[in-house]
Structures are given as structure tokens and as C-alpha cells.
Length: 347
Ligand SMILES: [Ca+2]
Ligand SMILES: [Ca+2]
Ligand SMILES: [Ca+2]
Image (tube, rainbow, N blue to C red):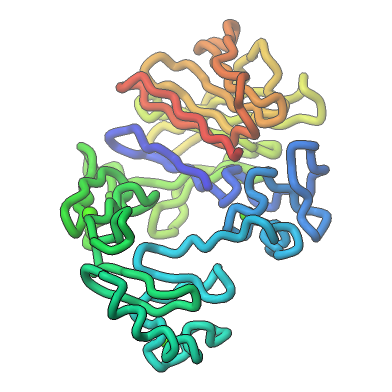
């Protein structure tokens, strides 16, 4: 549920993003805030907006359990598929009443198949018809969906489905085309994009923050020559490619002890000039940060006070950018060339 916009033409270091958006592993249990839902395990906190949204977010799936979500269980099957008795299980509509039980509960087959078979003959479907417990339903060939009249077929816009393409999606009649923005190449799966390795002598590396340190590794998994940088419970990190500098937040026991630090990592060989940048606002609840590589400004996401604020390069001038209608913000990405700041909330 987190996304990182890689905005550098040539990527030196990436961040590892865990599923909940934090750049941290082994996060200790927290007390849930009033804005959060407590999972049945009494340990995990999730955003209230994730309760009954059709995806299991608690480790035990209790945010989607029938006793909590009995009133809003809606089948979210892909186009031309149909939910079984358990709406989480979808099968292609051509498999309804085909004589082979495919739903775990056998719901797709039964006496209704024979009793209602003739209904399909009068259903007026343009292409295909399936028999369900509720009567006949039209469906379409791949790449098409049933139009509002319930009978004819029209192009299905795959680009409206999140994740169809990793970058640019162009809808076509009966299909779609994925493409990549400048600096990236389409991969053999025709939907993913990968950054061009430019310049070729600077291979992409992963910069990983955890509770104890920041370390660098190559994409093939071999460790780099860069010594690990000892940190304290780092929750947020970013880098400035042109300056070969990494910045992170050291989380102390008190707000005053939580500091923004930066260090130079020239040629990924050594760590030099570790320095503290005094920020005039509290960083104690900041979980994500991003650096505008054009101006050097720092952007911070505070998920307790629900705000996004920006500070200039020396940290002395800070301005709150967003604090209205921001619910549990979890991520931030910048595109300085386009002048865009994107914040991800979990409502
Ligand atoms: Ca959920
Ligand atoms: Ca079947
Ligand atoms: Ca299409």
C-alpha cells in the first residue's frame, strides 16, 4: 500500500518499502490510536478505512470477518468473473453450470443449471450467457465488459484498474498498451518499467534503513563497500543523488532527541561528514520524508498530527503544507521537475 515515485533519471539508491509503508523492519507493537481499528490479535492496528474493504489487512483477517462486515460484503470479482457463495472466491463466468464444480462450495453447479437453462435462450445476450442462482447473466469475450443494458458488450478500460501498467497505460478497443516514461524501458512482461542504467558505470543500489543502521546492497544482493551507518530507529530516509548524500531521522526517546541527520557517501565507498540539521518543528512522529533535489527542501509526513510540512535546506524555516482532511498519511513522493508533491493517506 505504499508507492515510491522514482524521480531521478539515474538511480543510485532505492528505499525498501514494507507493506505498511514504513522503512523499518521489526516495528514494535503500538497502542492503537482512536482513528485505528484493533485487530482481533489485540496487537495490530490498522486504519479504520481498511475495515471491510474486501482486503485482509489484519494478520488474522479479522478486519474482514463476517461478523464485522456482514452488511457490506460485496463481490469484487474481475470483469467477466462471478463470485461464489463466498464472494472472495471468483470464477470465470464460462465455468458457471459447465458440469464441473469449481467453487469450493459447489455453488456454481446445481439444479438451477437445468431449471434455468432456457432463460439464457431469451436473455438477449450479445455474446455469452451464464446461468446463476439469480437467473441468466450476460458476459463478454476477454477485453470487453457488459454495457449498461446488461446485454451488449463494450470495451473494458483496463487502465482504470490500479496496477494494470506500472507507469503509462493507453486503453484500446479490446485491449490496452503499457509504456514507460523517459529514462525507463518496458520489460518483457509488457507492463513493468525498469530504469535505464545511465551512466552505465553507476549500477543501481538499494539503500536500506532498519532499526539499527542504514546499509547499502546491490540489486543482485551482494553487499557494497559502503560501511553501514549506525542509526537509532530510523523511520524515514531519502537521498540526494547529485550530492551523493543520504539523510535520515534518528528517533530519540524525546521529541528534542529526534534529529534529522545527513551524511555524504561519495562513490558508495565511505561515509563522511555526518551532520545534524536542526529542524525548528518536531520530527518525533515523522514516518516518511522526501528531499526536493532541486531546492534541497525537506518534506516530512507526520502520521500522528496528520500533517505534511516542508523545511528549507538549513532547517530553520518550516511551513505546514497540509493538515486538513489528511488521515493517517503514510507516504510522500516528490517530482521537483513537475512541481508535484504526492502524499498517500490510508483513509
Ligand atoms: Ca481490510
Ligand atoms: Ca463449474
Ligand atoms: Ca480496453
